[in-house]
Image (tube, rainbow, N blue to C red; front, side, top):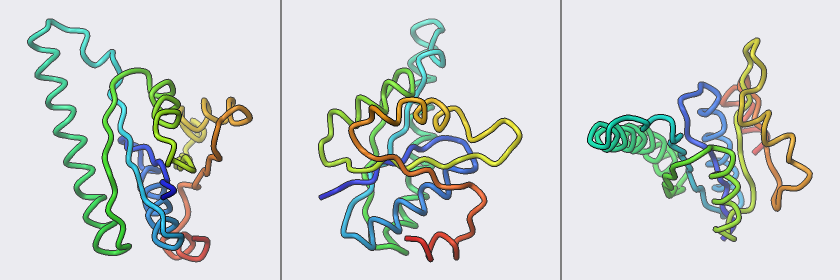
Length: 151
């Protein structure tokens, strides 16, 4: 089964990427894998404090995932899987793509603010020509109706 890999982060545009991935998966018989990457700099503290922070980060990720997963199951009939990795986001995204051969498309949401599309879109766009799979960039300003029309 082909999976759509979507990145879970705290950005507003992440919502449209999640919607797009779920709708495409539902319409094509695919699956959704949600990847969240915990950057290493979040845990550069004493060992005990770092472990507590790591556990809190995972709890926060799982809470966000559960909200998206419920919507995907209830509205799209898609049961997503969650993968949590620790490291540099771009490295971990590429590692996940290389390790899971069922991933067929990376789905990213593009920011609409003055700072540009966002760090993931910017960084992965620079390497798009060498990616082993296609990447879909979903504009952050698309409405639910527009997403439904294109998926």
